[in-house]
Image (tube, rainbow, N blue to C red; front, side, top):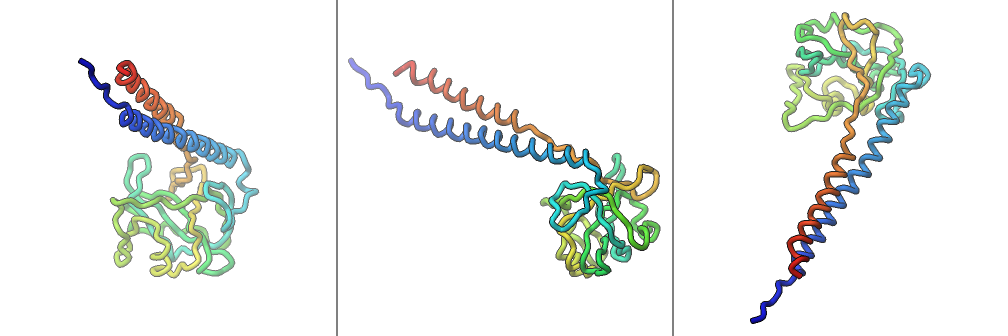
Length: 231
C-alpha cells in the first residue's frame, strides 16, 4: 500500500518568508549600528573641540557644543517639571536668550535643576543682566509621551516644551526649535545645577542583529529536521 508524501510547498514558502523577514530585521539592525556608531563618534568629536570657538546658530545641528551670546529675558522664565537630580524632585529652569534686542527672536536656555521649593521663588533665579555668553549643548527638547500631562497655561504649570503655546502665552514667536543646555560653572552647590550632561547613547544594535540572524538560522534548521528528512 503506497502513501502519498505531503507537499512541501506550504512549509517551504512559510520558511522562506520567515527567514526573509528575520534577515531583513538583522540587516536593518546592522544599518542602525553603522548610524549609531557615526552619531557616537560625532558626539565624541564635539567634546574634543574647544566649545568657545564654535558659535551656535539656527543652522547648527543638534548635539553640538558651542557658545551663544545674547540677553536673558528673565521675565519669561518658567519652570518645567517634574525633573529629578540625584533622585531629588524639582524643576528645570527655562529662560529665553534674546538675540539682536528682539524679544521675538531667541533660543530657550535650560539653565539647570532646582528643588521644588523654588516654585514660588523665581525671583531668586534671575539670570545675569546685560549681554552674556552661554556655553552649552544644543539639543532637541525632550519628547512627550502618553503619560505627559498637558501644560496648564492658566496656572503656569509646564510639563513639556510646546513652541506654539510659548508663542501664544509668552509672545515668543521666533524661538529656535532646539534648546541649549547651559553647562554652567564647576560649582554645583548653587542653583540652578547645570544639566548639560554628556550624552551616553546605548548601542545594542549588534546584539539585536546577531539575534535576528540566529533566529533565521534556527528556523532553517528546524525546517530541515522536520521536513527534509522525510522527503
